[in-house]
Length: 62
Image (tube, rainbow, N blue to C red; front, side, top):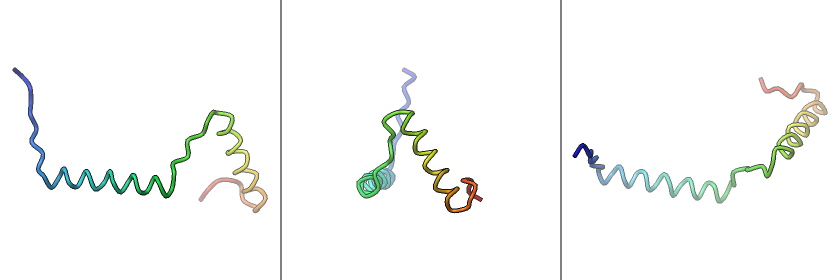
């Protein structure tokens, strides 16, 4: 007892399927960046700041 069954309309299931499919396609074209470790994170930040400083900016987006 106490179990709740939620009925999901077919159109909602189709919408969710299409969203998952679109996300998979997007991720195949633009793979998410997952750094291997924290050191690579720090290196990326240092590189971004150094590049911004070379361009005459302060590294902060406005």
